[in-house]
Image 1 (cartoon, rainbow, N blue to C red):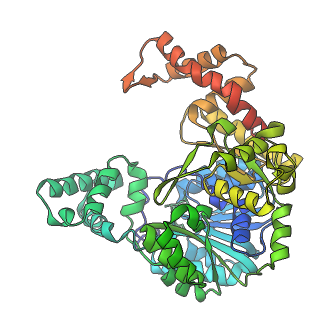
Image 2 (image 1 turned 135 degrees about the vertical axis):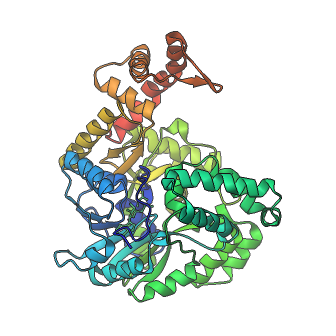
Image 3 (image 1 turned 60 degrees about the vertical axis):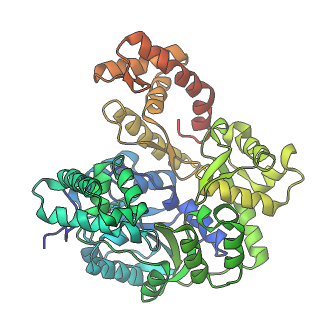
Amino acid sequence: MTWSQGYVTDVDYTFGYYPELNPAMLDLACLCHGVAPPLGDKPRYLELGFGQGVSINLHAAGSDGSYWGTDFNSAHVAGARTLARVSGADIRLLEDSFEEFATRTDLPDFDAIVLHGVWSWITDAGRASVKDIVRQRLRPGGIVYVSYNCLPGWAPIAPIREMMAICRDRSRSGANGTILEARALLNELVRAGADCFRDNPLALHHLETLRRQDPAYLAHEYLNADWRLENVSALVRDLRDAKLTFLGPARLLDAVDAIQLGVDGRKLIARFDDAVMRETLRDHLVNRRFRADIFAKGPRRLTGPELREAWHELAFVLMVPAIDVPKRIPCARGEAELDAQRYDPLIEALAGGGYRAKTIDELLATPGLSDRRSEDVAEALTILAGAGLVSPARPLSVEKEARCSALNAYILGRARVSMDLQHLASPATGGGVRATHVGQLFALAHGEGEDRAEALAQYVWRFLESVGERLTKDGNRLEAKDDNLRALMPSAERFLKFDQPHLRGLRVI
Ligand SMILES: C[S@@+](CC[C@H](N)C(=O)[O-])C[C@H]1O[C@@H](n2cnc3c(N)ncnc32)[C@H](O)[C@@H]1O
Protein backbone atom coordinates (compact mmCIF):
# COMPACT_ATOMS: atom_id res chain seq x y z
CA MET A 1 0.00 0.00 0.00
CA THR A 2 1.29 3.51 -0.83
CA TRP A 3 1.08 6.60 1.41
CA SER A 4 -2.42 7.25 0.06
CA GLN A 5 -3.82 3.91 1.32
CA GLY A 6 -6.01 3.51 -1.77
CA TYR A 7 -7.37 7.07 -1.50
CA VAL A 8 -7.76 8.90 -4.86
CA THR A 9 -4.80 11.25 -5.40
CA ASP A 10 -4.44 11.71 -9.15
CA VAL A 11 -7.38 14.13 -9.28
CA ASP A 12 -7.38 17.07 -6.85
CA TYR A 13 -10.56 17.61 -4.89
CA THR A 14 -13.09 20.39 -5.62
CA PHE A 15 -12.88 23.83 -3.97
CA GLY A 16 -15.99 23.47 -1.80
CA TYR A 17 -16.87 25.64 1.17
CA TYR A 18 -19.03 24.18 3.96
CA PRO A 19 -20.78 26.72 6.22
CA GLU A 20 -21.73 24.01 8.75
CA LEU A 21 -18.02 23.90 9.70
CA ASN A 22 -18.04 27.57 10.68
CA PRO A 23 -17.37 27.72 14.47
CA ALA A 24 -20.33 30.11 14.80
CA MET A 25 -22.63 27.60 13.05
CA LEU A 26 -21.28 24.73 15.17
CA ASP A 27 -22.07 26.73 18.31
CA LEU A 28 -25.58 27.41 16.98
CA ALA A 29 -26.12 23.72 16.21
CA CYS A 30 -25.11 22.82 19.80
CA LEU A 31 -27.57 25.39 21.12
CA CYS A 32 -30.32 23.95 18.92
CA HIS A 33 -29.60 20.56 20.55
CA GLY A 34 -29.85 22.12 24.02
CA VAL A 35 -26.10 22.11 24.75
CA ALA A 36 -23.89 25.03 25.83
CA PRO A 37 -22.05 26.41 22.78
CA PRO A 38 -18.49 25.21 23.41
CA LEU A 39 -16.45 27.27 20.94
CA GLY A 40 -17.04 31.00 21.43
CA ASP A 41 -15.02 33.48 19.45
CA LYS A 42 -11.54 32.00 19.99
CA PRO A 43 -11.73 28.25 19.43
CA ARG A 44 -8.85 25.83 19.10
CA TYR A 45 -10.06 24.09 15.99
CA LEU A 46 -8.80 21.07 14.05
CA GLU A 47 -9.93 20.01 10.56
CA LEU A 48 -8.94 16.49 9.48
CA GLY A 49 -8.70 16.02 5.69
CA PHE A 50 -9.16 19.69 4.76
CA GLY A 51 -8.90 19.07 0.97
CA GLN A 52 -8.23 22.33 -0.87
CA GLY A 53 -8.48 24.09 2.50
CA VAL A 54 -11.15 26.60 1.48
CA SER A 55 -13.29 26.10 4.58
CA ILE A 56 -10.46 26.14 7.13
CA ASN A 57 -8.88 29.22 5.55
CA LEU A 58 -12.13 31.22 5.42
CA HIS A 59 -12.89 30.28 9.03
CA ALA A 60 -9.40 31.10 10.28
CA ALA A 61 -9.50 34.48 8.51
CA GLY A 62 -13.01 35.41 9.66
CA SER A 63 -12.89 34.14 13.25
CA ASP A 64 -10.31 34.47 16.02
CA GLY A 65 -8.75 31.40 17.61
CA SER A 66 -6.13 28.97 16.41
CA TYR A 67 -6.71 26.59 13.52
CA TRP A 68 -4.94 23.32 12.80
CA GLY A 69 -5.49 20.99 9.90
CA THR A 70 -3.91 17.96 8.32
CA ASP A 71 -4.25 16.32 4.90
CA PHE A 72 -1.81 13.82 3.40
CA ASN A 73 -2.27 15.10 -0.17
CA SER A 74 0.76 17.38 -0.75
CA ALA A 75 -0.90 19.29 -3.62
CA HIS A 76 -3.86 20.13 -1.35
CA VAL A 77 -1.53 21.23 1.46
CA ALA A 78 0.55 23.45 -0.85
CA GLY A 79 -2.55 25.23 -2.22
CA ALA A 80 -4.16 25.63 1.20
CA ARG A 81 -0.93 27.05 2.68
CA THR A 82 -0.89 29.76 0.02
CA LEU A 83 -4.29 30.98 1.24
CA ALA A 84 -3.08 30.80 4.85
CA ARG A 85 0.03 32.89 4.12
CA VAL A 86 -2.07 35.54 2.43
CA SER A 87 -4.51 36.01 5.32
CA GLY A 88 -1.88 35.82 8.08
CA ALA A 89 -4.35 33.84 10.23
CA ASP A 90 -3.24 31.67 13.14
CA ILE A 91 -3.34 28.45 11.15
CA ARG A 92 -1.06 25.43 10.86
CA LEU A 93 -1.62 23.14 7.89
CA LEU A 94 0.24 19.83 8.16
CA GLU A 95 0.86 17.11 5.61
CA ASP A 96 0.52 14.23 8.08
CA SER A 97 -1.72 11.23 7.53
CA PHE A 98 -4.22 10.77 10.36
CA GLU A 99 -2.04 7.90 11.59
CA GLU A 100 1.02 10.21 11.79
CA PHE A 101 -0.97 13.08 13.27
CA ALA A 102 -2.25 10.80 16.06
CA THR A 103 1.32 10.20 17.26
CA ARG A 104 2.38 13.88 17.41
CA THR A 105 3.38 15.21 20.79
CA ASP A 106 3.18 18.94 19.96
CA LEU A 107 -0.60 19.31 19.78
CA PRO A 108 -2.85 21.45 22.00
CA ASP A 109 -6.24 20.25 23.26
CA PHE A 110 -8.92 21.20 20.75
CA ASP A 111 -12.42 22.62 21.30
CA ALA A 112 -13.63 21.22 17.98
CA ILE A 113 -12.45 18.48 15.64
CA VAL A 114 -14.20 18.44 12.26
CA LEU A 115 -14.14 16.03 9.30
CA HIS A 116 -16.21 16.77 6.22
CA GLY A 117 -16.37 14.27 3.35
CA VAL A 118 -13.73 12.06 4.96
CA TRP A 119 -15.09 9.40 7.34
CA SER A 120 -16.84 7.15 4.79
CA TRP A 121 -13.91 7.04 2.37
CA ILE A 122 -10.89 6.17 4.55
CA THR A 123 -9.47 2.89 5.76
CA ASP A 124 -10.43 1.23 9.05
CA ALA A 125 -6.93 2.12 10.29
CA GLY A 126 -7.57 5.77 9.34
CA ARG A 127 -10.86 5.73 11.27
CA ALA A 128 -9.10 4.18 14.28
CA SER A 129 -6.53 7.01 14.16
CA VAL A 130 -9.28 9.62 13.99
CA LYS A 131 -10.78 8.09 17.13
CA ASP A 132 -7.34 8.14 18.82
CA ILE A 133 -6.98 11.83 17.94
CA VAL A 134 -10.41 12.57 19.40
CA ARG A 135 -9.74 10.52 22.54
CA GLN A 136 -6.40 12.18 23.19
CA ARG A 137 -6.82 15.71 21.89
CA LEU A 138 -10.47 16.76 22.23
CA ARG A 139 -10.92 18.65 25.48
CA PRO A 140 -13.76 17.67 27.81
CA GLY A 141 -16.82 19.59 26.62
CA GLY A 142 -15.39 19.80 23.09
CA ILE A 143 -17.27 18.71 19.97
CA VAL A 144 -16.76 16.61 16.84
CA TYR A 145 -18.44 17.28 13.49
CA VAL A 146 -18.48 14.32 11.13
CA SER A 147 -20.27 13.96 7.81
CA TYR A 148 -20.77 10.58 6.16
CA ASN A 149 -22.71 8.54 3.63
CA CYS A 150 -25.52 6.83 5.43
CA LEU A 151 -28.16 4.18 5.14
CA PRO A 152 -30.86 3.59 4.16
CA GLY A 153 -30.57 6.13 1.30
CA TRP A 154 -27.38 4.77 -0.25
CA ALA A 155 -28.44 1.13 -0.25
CA PRO A 156 -30.03 1.13 -3.77
CA ILE A 157 -26.95 2.84 -5.20
CA ALA A 158 -24.37 0.43 -3.78
CA PRO A 159 -24.32 -1.67 -7.01
CA ILE A 160 -23.27 1.41 -9.05
CA ARG A 161 -20.41 2.08 -6.71
CA GLU A 162 -19.27 -1.52 -6.89
CA MET A 163 -19.23 -1.37 -10.71
CA MET A 164 -17.08 1.75 -10.45
CA ALA A 165 -14.71 -0.06 -8.09
CA ILE A 166 -14.37 -3.00 -10.50
CA CYS A 167 -13.66 -0.57 -13.38
CA ARG A 168 -11.07 1.19 -11.20
CA ASP A 169 -9.24 -2.08 -10.56
CA ARG A 170 -9.10 -2.86 -14.31
CA SER A 171 -8.59 0.62 -15.79
CA ARG A 172 -5.30 2.16 -16.88
CA SER A 173 -6.86 5.57 -17.55
CA GLY A 174 -6.45 7.39 -14.22
CA ALA A 175 -9.36 8.55 -12.09
CA ASN A 176 -11.05 10.85 -14.63
CA GLY A 177 -10.79 8.23 -17.39
CA THR A 178 -12.10 5.52 -15.08
CA ILE A 179 -15.17 7.58 -14.24
CA LEU A 180 -15.93 8.05 -17.95
CA GLU A 181 -15.38 4.34 -18.70
CA ALA A 182 -17.52 3.23 -15.77
CA ARG A 183 -20.32 5.64 -16.68
CA ALA A 184 -20.29 4.31 -20.26
CA LEU A 185 -20.39 0.68 -19.09
CA LEU A 186 -23.25 1.34 -16.66
CA ASN A 187 -25.23 3.00 -19.46
CA GLU A 188 -24.58 -0.03 -21.69
CA LEU A 189 -25.98 -2.21 -18.91
CA VAL A 190 -29.16 -0.11 -18.89
CA ARG A 191 -29.46 -0.34 -22.68
CA ALA A 192 -28.99 -4.11 -22.42
CA GLY A 193 -32.10 -4.14 -20.18
CA ALA A 194 -30.35 -5.04 -16.91
CA ASP A 195 -32.97 -6.25 -14.39
CA CYS A 196 -30.95 -4.57 -11.64
CA PHE A 197 -31.99 -1.15 -12.99
CA ARG A 198 -35.53 -2.25 -13.91
CA ASP A 199 -36.15 -3.44 -10.32
CA ASN A 200 -34.35 -0.52 -8.78
CA PRO A 201 -35.57 2.76 -10.33
CA LEU A 202 -33.63 4.83 -7.78
CA ALA A 203 -30.36 3.41 -9.12
CA LEU A 204 -31.43 4.31 -12.65
CA HIS A 205 -32.30 7.83 -11.58
CA HIS A 206 -28.93 8.10 -9.84
CA LEU A 207 -27.14 7.05 -13.00
CA GLU A 208 -28.83 9.96 -14.77
CA THR A 209 -27.55 12.43 -12.14
CA LEU A 210 -23.97 11.10 -12.52
CA ARG A 211 -23.97 12.48 -16.06
CA ARG A 212 -24.18 16.05 -14.73
CA GLN A 213 -21.63 15.74 -11.91
CA ASP A 214 -18.02 16.92 -11.83
CA PRO A 215 -15.67 13.93 -12.49
CA ALA A 216 -13.30 15.23 -9.73
CA TYR A 217 -16.11 14.95 -7.19
CA LEU A 218 -17.18 11.56 -8.59
CA ALA A 219 -13.61 10.21 -8.38
CA HIS A 220 -13.42 11.06 -4.67
CA GLU A 221 -16.93 9.72 -4.04
CA TYR A 222 -16.65 6.39 -5.88
CA LEU A 223 -13.07 5.38 -6.59
CA ASN A 224 -11.44 5.25 -3.18
CA ALA A 225 -10.47 1.78 -2.05
CA ASP A 226 -12.65 2.25 1.04
CA TRP A 227 -16.32 3.18 1.13
CA ARG A 228 -18.36 2.68 4.22
CA LEU A 229 -22.11 3.06 4.48
CA GLU A 230 -23.58 3.14 7.96
CA ASN A 231 -26.65 3.95 9.98
CA VAL A 232 -26.46 6.79 12.45
CA SER A 233 -26.99 4.23 15.25
CA ALA A 234 -23.86 2.29 14.16
CA LEU A 235 -21.75 5.44 14.14
CA VAL A 236 -23.03 6.43 17.58
CA ARG A 237 -21.96 3.00 18.93
CA ASP A 238 -18.58 3.25 17.20
CA LEU A 239 -17.77 6.71 18.57
CA ARG A 240 -18.62 5.73 22.14
CA ASP A 241 -15.04 4.37 22.32
CA ALA A 242 -13.84 7.93 21.88
CA LYS A 243 -16.12 9.05 24.75
CA LEU A 244 -18.44 10.87 22.38
CA THR A 245 -22.15 11.51 22.98
CA PHE A 246 -24.45 12.07 20.00
CA LEU A 247 -26.05 15.54 19.96
CA GLY A 248 -27.84 15.59 16.59
CA PRO A 249 -27.61 16.90 13.03
CA ALA A 250 -25.22 19.73 12.18
CA ARG A 251 -27.44 20.71 9.27
CA LEU A 252 -30.11 22.55 11.17
CA LEU A 253 -32.97 21.91 8.75
CA ASP A 254 -32.54 18.15 9.10
CA ALA A 255 -33.89 18.40 12.65
CA VAL A 256 -36.93 20.56 11.81
CA ASP A 257 -39.71 17.99 11.47
CA ALA A 258 -42.31 20.63 10.57
CA ILE A 259 -40.34 21.28 7.38
CA GLN A 260 -39.11 17.79 6.55
CA LEU A 261 -41.89 15.38 7.52
CA GLY A 262 -45.58 14.76 6.87
CA VAL A 263 -48.13 14.55 9.69
CA ASP A 264 -47.86 10.78 10.18
CA GLY A 265 -44.06 10.90 10.26
CA ARG A 266 -44.17 13.67 12.87
CA LYS A 267 -46.59 11.64 15.02
CA LEU A 268 -44.31 8.64 14.86
CA ILE A 269 -41.22 10.63 15.87
CA ALA A 270 -43.09 12.33 18.70
CA ARG A 271 -43.54 8.94 20.44
CA PHE A 272 -39.81 8.66 21.17
CA ASP A 273 -37.48 10.66 23.43
CA ASP A 274 -34.28 8.93 22.47
CA ALA A 275 -32.24 11.08 20.01
CA VAL A 276 -30.72 8.10 18.15
CA MET A 277 -34.09 6.40 17.63
CA ARG A 278 -35.62 9.67 16.42
CA GLU A 279 -32.79 10.22 13.94
CA THR A 280 -33.00 6.66 12.67
CA LEU A 281 -36.74 7.02 12.09
CA ARG A 282 -36.21 10.38 10.35
CA ASP A 283 -33.57 8.81 8.07
CA HIS A 284 -36.03 6.12 7.04
CA LEU A 285 -38.87 8.60 6.58
CA VAL A 286 -36.81 10.71 4.14
CA ASN A 287 -34.57 7.85 2.86
CA ARG A 288 -31.49 9.90 3.83
CA ARG A 289 -28.22 9.35 2.04
CA PHE A 290 -25.89 11.83 3.68
CA ARG A 291 -25.59 12.97 7.27
CA ALA A 292 -23.55 15.55 9.13
CA ASP A 293 -23.67 15.05 12.90
CA ILE A 294 -22.35 16.68 16.02
CA PHE A 295 -20.98 14.69 18.94
CA ALA A 296 -19.68 16.04 22.25
CA LYS A 297 -17.21 14.75 24.82
CA GLY A 298 -19.17 15.42 28.01
CA PRO A 299 -21.84 17.87 26.74
CA ARG A 300 -23.15 20.48 29.18
CA ARG A 301 -26.94 20.47 28.79
CA LEU A 302 -28.58 23.83 29.38
CA THR A 303 -31.65 24.49 31.49
CA GLY A 304 -34.59 26.37 29.93
CA PRO A 305 -33.55 29.80 31.30
CA GLU A 306 -29.91 29.19 30.28
CA LEU A 307 -31.04 28.30 26.77
CA ARG A 308 -33.08 31.49 26.49
CA GLU A 309 -30.15 33.55 27.75
CA ALA A 310 -27.77 31.93 25.25
CA TRP A 311 -30.15 32.67 22.36
CA HIS A 312 -30.42 36.30 23.43
CA GLU A 313 -26.64 36.68 23.36
CA LEU A 314 -26.49 35.71 19.67
CA ALA A 315 -26.65 38.07 16.71
CA PHE A 316 -27.58 37.16 13.13
CA VAL A 317 -26.95 38.40 9.60
CA LEU A 318 -28.54 37.71 6.22
CA MET A 319 -26.29 35.63 3.96
CA VAL A 320 -27.85 36.89 0.72
CA PRO A 321 -29.31 40.23 -0.39
CA ALA A 322 -32.90 40.46 0.88
CA ILE A 323 -34.21 40.29 -2.68
CA ASP A 324 -32.64 36.82 -3.09
CA VAL A 325 -34.43 35.18 -0.16
CA PRO A 326 -36.70 32.67 -1.89
CA LYS A 327 -40.37 32.08 -1.08
CA ARG A 328 -39.77 28.32 -0.94
CA ILE A 329 -36.78 26.31 0.31
CA PRO A 330 -35.72 22.78 -0.64
CA CYS A 331 -36.55 20.07 1.86
CA ALA A 332 -36.87 16.28 1.96
CA ARG A 333 -40.42 16.38 0.62
CA GLY A 334 -39.55 18.74 -2.24
CA GLU A 335 -40.08 22.33 -1.15
CA ALA A 336 -41.37 24.09 1.94
CA GLU A 337 -42.96 27.51 1.85
CA LEU A 338 -41.47 30.42 3.79
CA ASP A 339 -44.77 31.96 4.85
CA ALA A 340 -44.64 35.66 3.88
CA GLN A 341 -46.38 36.87 7.05
CA ARG A 342 -43.88 35.12 9.23
CA TYR A 343 -40.68 35.64 7.27
CA ASP A 344 -40.94 38.89 5.29
CA PRO A 345 -40.80 41.25 8.32
CA LEU A 346 -37.88 39.23 9.71
CA ILE A 347 -35.94 39.44 6.43
CA GLU A 348 -36.65 43.16 6.25
CA ALA A 349 -35.43 43.65 9.81
CA LEU A 350 -32.25 41.66 9.14
CA ALA A 351 -31.55 43.73 6.01
CA GLY A 352 -32.13 47.02 7.85
CA GLY A 353 -29.25 49.24 8.95
CA GLY A 354 -27.10 48.14 6.00
CA TYR A 355 -27.28 44.42 6.89
CA ARG A 356 -25.53 44.93 10.25
CA ALA A 357 -25.79 42.00 12.69
CA LYS A 358 -28.76 42.06 15.08
CA THR A 359 -29.67 40.20 18.26
CA ILE A 360 -33.14 38.75 18.82
CA ASP A 361 -33.94 41.70 21.11
CA GLU A 362 -32.95 44.16 18.39
CA LEU A 363 -35.06 42.26 15.87
CA LEU A 364 -38.05 42.27 18.24
CA ALA A 365 -37.69 46.05 18.60
CA THR A 366 -38.33 46.59 14.86
CA PRO A 367 -41.93 47.65 14.02
CA GLY A 368 -42.83 44.55 11.95
CA LEU A 369 -41.80 42.12 14.71
CA SER A 370 -42.92 43.83 17.91
CA ASP A 371 -45.84 41.37 18.40
CA ARG A 372 -43.65 38.25 18.06
CA ARG A 373 -42.48 35.93 20.80
CA SER A 374 -38.71 35.49 20.96
CA GLU A 375 -39.13 31.68 20.63
CA ASP A 376 -40.90 32.21 17.31
CA VAL A 377 -38.10 34.48 16.02
CA ALA A 378 -35.47 31.97 17.22
CA GLU A 379 -37.24 29.14 15.36
CA ALA A 380 -37.57 31.19 12.15
CA LEU A 381 -33.86 32.13 12.39
CA THR A 382 -32.96 28.45 12.83
CA ILE A 383 -34.88 27.56 9.66
CA LEU A 384 -33.29 30.40 7.70
CA ALA A 385 -29.82 29.43 8.98
CA GLY A 386 -30.51 25.80 8.03
CA ALA A 387 -31.40 26.95 4.53
CA GLY A 388 -28.13 28.92 4.30
CA LEU A 389 -29.95 32.27 4.22
CA VAL A 390 -28.88 33.49 7.66
CA SER A 391 -25.75 33.04 9.73
CA PRO A 392 -24.97 33.67 13.36
CA ALA A 393 -22.66 36.68 13.55
CA ARG A 394 -19.38 37.17 15.37
CA PRO A 395 -18.11 40.40 16.93
CA LEU A 396 -16.04 42.49 14.52
CA SER A 397 -12.40 43.38 15.18
CA VAL A 398 -9.70 45.27 13.30
CA GLU A 399 -7.59 42.08 13.12
CA LYS A 400 -10.37 39.98 11.57
CA GLU A 401 -11.19 42.70 9.07
CA ALA A 402 -7.52 42.92 8.05
CA ARG A 403 -7.23 39.14 7.58
CA CYS A 404 -10.43 38.91 5.53
CA SER A 405 -9.51 41.91 3.44
CA ALA A 406 -6.08 40.40 2.56
CA LEU A 407 -7.61 37.01 1.72
CA ASN A 408 -10.44 38.55 -0.31
CA ALA A 409 -7.99 40.71 -2.30
CA TYR A 410 -6.12 37.52 -3.18
CA ILE A 411 -9.31 35.60 -4.12
CA LEU A 412 -10.59 38.48 -6.25
CA GLY A 413 -7.20 38.78 -7.97
CA ARG A 414 -7.33 35.06 -8.69
CA ALA A 415 -10.73 35.51 -10.36
CA ARG A 416 -8.78 37.06 -13.26
CA VAL A 417 -7.18 33.70 -14.04
CA SER A 418 -9.38 31.05 -12.47
CA MET A 419 -12.98 30.29 -11.51
CA ASP A 420 -12.21 27.80 -8.72
CA LEU A 421 -12.96 29.89 -5.61
CA GLN A 422 -16.62 30.80 -5.16
CA HIS A 423 -16.56 32.28 -1.66
CA LEU A 424 -15.14 35.34 0.08
CA ALA A 425 -14.36 35.78 3.78
CA SER A 426 -16.58 37.79 6.11
CA PRO A 427 -15.46 38.99 9.56
CA ALA A 428 -19.16 39.46 10.38
CA THR A 429 -20.02 35.76 9.97
CA GLY A 430 -16.59 34.35 10.81
CA GLY A 431 -16.62 32.39 7.55
CA GLY A 432 -17.40 32.33 3.85
CA VAL A 433 -20.00 34.18 1.80
CA ARG A 434 -20.90 32.97 -1.67
CA ALA A 435 -19.71 35.15 -4.56
CA THR A 436 -20.10 33.99 -8.17
CA HIS A 437 -17.21 34.41 -10.58
CA VAL A 438 -18.89 37.29 -12.41
CA GLY A 439 -19.79 38.81 -9.03
CA GLN A 440 -16.10 38.64 -8.08
CA LEU A 441 -15.12 40.42 -11.28
CA PHE A 442 -17.71 43.13 -10.58
CA ALA A 443 -16.31 43.46 -7.05
CA LEU A 444 -12.80 43.84 -8.51
CA ALA A 445 -13.97 46.57 -10.88
CA HIS A 446 -15.88 48.29 -8.11
CA GLY A 447 -12.81 48.12 -5.86
CA GLU A 448 -10.86 49.87 -8.63
CA GLY A 449 -13.29 52.80 -8.47
CA GLU A 450 -15.86 51.86 -11.13
CA ASP A 451 -19.38 52.64 -9.97
CA ARG A 452 -21.45 52.61 -13.18
CA ALA A 453 -23.06 49.44 -14.52
CA GLU A 454 -21.64 50.10 -18.04
CA ALA A 455 -18.11 50.26 -16.60
CA LEU A 456 -18.58 46.99 -14.67
CA ALA A 457 -19.89 45.26 -17.80
CA GLN A 458 -16.93 46.58 -19.83
CA TYR A 459 -14.54 45.28 -17.17
CA VAL A 460 -15.98 41.77 -17.34
CA TRP A 461 -16.03 41.91 -21.13
CA ARG A 462 -12.29 42.76 -21.20
CA PHE A 463 -11.70 39.72 -18.97
CA LEU A 464 -13.79 37.43 -21.20
CA GLU A 465 -11.99 38.69 -24.29
CA SER A 466 -8.55 38.19 -22.74
CA VAL A 467 -9.27 34.52 -21.94
CA GLY A 468 -11.22 33.84 -25.16
CA GLU A 469 -14.46 33.21 -23.24
CA ARG A 470 -17.96 34.43 -24.09
CA LEU A 471 -21.31 34.48 -22.33
CA THR A 472 -23.97 32.09 -23.55
CA LYS A 473 -27.68 32.71 -24.03
CA ASP A 474 -30.18 29.86 -24.43
CA GLY A 475 -27.20 27.54 -24.91
CA ASN A 476 -25.68 29.68 -27.71
CA ARG A 477 -22.30 31.37 -27.42
CA LEU A 478 -22.57 35.14 -27.82
CA GLU A 479 -19.65 36.12 -30.07
CA ALA A 480 -20.20 39.85 -30.61
CA LYS A 481 -18.92 42.33 -28.02
CA ASP A 482 -22.24 44.24 -27.93
CA ASP A 483 -24.23 41.07 -27.30
CA ASN A 484 -21.96 40.21 -24.38
CA LEU A 485 -22.21 43.72 -22.93
CA ARG A 486 -26.00 43.71 -23.29
CA ALA A 487 -26.15 40.35 -21.50
CA LEU A 488 -23.90 41.62 -18.69
CA MET A 489 -25.82 44.83 -17.97
CA PRO A 490 -28.67 43.39 -15.87
CA SER A 491 -26.23 41.60 -13.54
CA ALA A 492 -24.00 44.68 -13.33
CA GLU A 493 -26.99 46.80 -12.33
CA ARG A 494 -28.04 44.15 -9.87
CA PHE A 495 -24.56 44.05 -8.37
CA LEU A 496 -24.55 47.79 -7.71
CA LYS A 497 -28.09 47.85 -6.33
CA PHE A 498 -28.23 44.66 -4.24
CA ASP A 499 -24.99 42.62 -3.99
CA GLN A 500 -22.61 45.44 -3.29
CA PRO A 501 -24.54 46.84 -0.27
CA HIS A 502 -24.92 43.32 1.08
CA LEU A 503 -21.22 42.45 0.72
CA ARG A 504 -20.34 45.80 2.26
CA GLY A 505 -22.67 45.14 5.21
CA LEU A 506 -20.95 41.80 5.83
CA ARG A 507 -17.58 43.63 5.59
CA VAL A 508 -16.53 41.47 2.66
CA ILE A 509 -15.69 44.44 0.42
C1 LIG B 1 -13.25 14.04 -0.12
S1 LIG B 1 -11.93 15.01 0.40
C2 LIG B 1 -12.77 16.20 1.41
C3 LIG B 1 -11.99 17.45 1.57
C4 LIG B 1 -12.64 18.56 2.37
N1 LIG B 1 -12.88 18.14 3.74
C5 LIG B 1 -13.90 18.98 1.68
O1 LIG B 1 -14.97 18.51 2.07
O2 LIG B 1 -13.81 19.79 0.76
C6 LIG B 1 -11.06 14.02 1.63
C7 LIG B 1 -9.71 14.58 1.99
O3 LIG B 1 -9.15 13.76 3.04
C8 LIG B 1 -7.78 13.51 2.77
N2 LIG B 1 -7.43 12.21 3.40
C9 LIG B 1 -8.01 11.00 3.14
N3 LIG B 1 -7.45 10.05 3.92
C10 LIG B 1 -6.52 10.66 4.70
C11 LIG B 1 -5.61 10.21 5.71
N4 LIG B 1 -5.57 8.92 6.09
N5 LIG B 1 -4.80 11.12 6.29
C12 LIG B 1 -4.84 12.43 5.91
N6 LIG B 1 -5.68 12.91 4.96
C13 LIG B 1 -6.51 12.05 4.37
C14 LIG B 1 -7.69 13.48 1.25
O4 LIG B 1 -6.39 13.80 0.79
C15 LIG B 1 -8.72 14.55 0.85
O5 LIG B 1 -8.13 15.82 0.70
